[in-house]
Image (cartoon, rainbow, N blue to C red; front, side, top):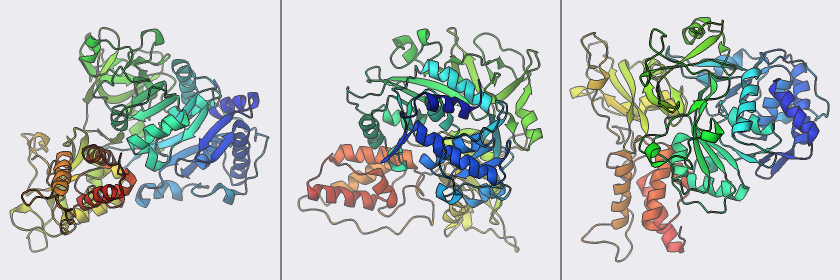
Length: 600
């Protein structure tokens, strides 16, 4: 199969003037991209990068990030994918131990473009990249992925997606996500082009739809929470988009068969790369375009295994389950990661000898599945407490470990709970520590006073990525225990989705109503915005409340802005709302847009 950069170099030599990457006004041909990566690779070699040297990439999704990914491979190293927005505490260990860190403009590396590849021999079993994933022990794990795994994905996906050089793929994944493998290499190793959406566009379904249409995108991978909003929008019939693949979380609803493109569910993980797809096999695929009414009465399945991938469904004793029974999904095949780098014990817990014999390995996913009579797999939750928040894997134990480092926290438990919109959100239940005289740091009735929730949120935000920061905070006198003296999660109270005590801004005076807009003393715009706010967050909001601190996130903000736009006939940009996400901002925006005569 070969190393991933050699697959790319083959296409670059065949059609050097074909477009490889488009990002705003920036356009790279295959020749441009290859030459820039060659130059940077030579600079990395001079700086000591060698076989499997870990090279942290702390860059936004951009042309520079793609050049760096290719260059690290060409130098024989392994790129460590980091998000520039992550707190310093999460990345300091990997940065301190690296001989080279790429976290700024590539021009600082004195890397002149070169038509000549460095020619470093790279075996397909060498590491190509590493990515962090949440860890149940309280610290993240670094998953090491080989060139063999990427090459297998390139081969299988190019066939299933029917990729041709005329295709234009979107690149939407966060920079630290292994999903970038899906969005980049099957296309760049097939002679197609990749198109980069900026962060604001990628986070707003209406703007992303418009960008896809205007950019002539033909194939797109979108994570589930965003996809449900995206394919629920009206689409022009003349769009070039032909296939949208959806993953990263359990897909809850079927897309309409009337969409002008096909939607297919996939399943995979950082440790096992591509596992299943509803496009396998092509002649019997199960998608928005092919599912019949019987199939649509159940949730969309996660599909069948990719060619060459094994997906045994086993009991806890690693014995096959009876036909049609729910069991744990194990994965074997060429797409398995090497394991958790530098952590042999944690690797041995998840990467086990294949029980079928033959000397291979299987990865224990922790996901519960059932095989249907048609051979497709259905997802049935998790064996452990792991949850998916906005498409990101989160181990609640890692969040709990961070909160327990705060001096005011004696005990805590973090769990995933469906929010008002149905999407899963993290909820923290906190027992506060006592002072030296035995009194609680909080007020009577176990409810801490002051800005306790705001302080804990800020503490978590400084140490954890945004999806791992709890959306709800509940003070407890004690945590409920079961007969085994373990926390009884089922006995935890329902979370409050409103702004916690001490975290909201003082309520502002209501915006002045326009003439004739009050009805029996009420302000319809203010009342309407607060009504929609409550429906989205599950709690009434004051005019100065902060949407994110009240339990919202970017996707629920997208829903709120869209519903307000529909009700009032205005178009409010998500990025503008998130700069000051309060009801007061929304009310002011509605009035300004109406006054200027602008509409949706």
